[in-house]
Image (cartoon, rainbow, N blue to C red):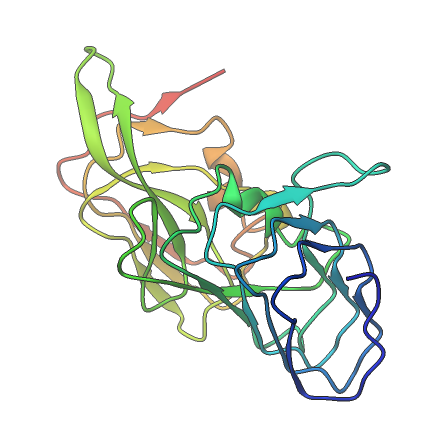
Length: 231
């Protein structure tokens, strides 16, 4: 699919399409939702761009490849400058969409105003979401003493309509790009579980200038004993 120029609010890409090009949906203020068929195997960076009223995207039910194409590097926004800004675009992730580094394609970087609400199928074995629209990955990590821990890795912190966010009990790691995904609504953040290993840019999540722009309070779990910074 190279270009869509129609005026439908809700578009279902025809079955049989295998690739969606950059700017396939561009500058379309009528568009509210796009559904990708399972036949789509590749989505190019900026496939949906500058669609101000976009509300929902349903991704294909397969291990789709997100690509920067010939010009851009891998793992850039599939959606750019979409939605109203104050209302996240719902991204539906079906059961079989288990593509590695999925969250890298929905970072809403500094050149994009898009924010996301992830809605993951409960039957997806790799990814999950919660009532806040956060994206998680089931994973195993090694702790300081070599023990393996199994649980959830927080991949994406999105705009939330609530001013309080409580992380799940089985959270074992925080790994997302807070500096490129600022959060203006959350004022109180409660960490649960025992995230022994945090990504090296953890300080960015706590920095109101780069991540939680209105954060006032962080509640640490009572059992937390160590912050380890990886380099």
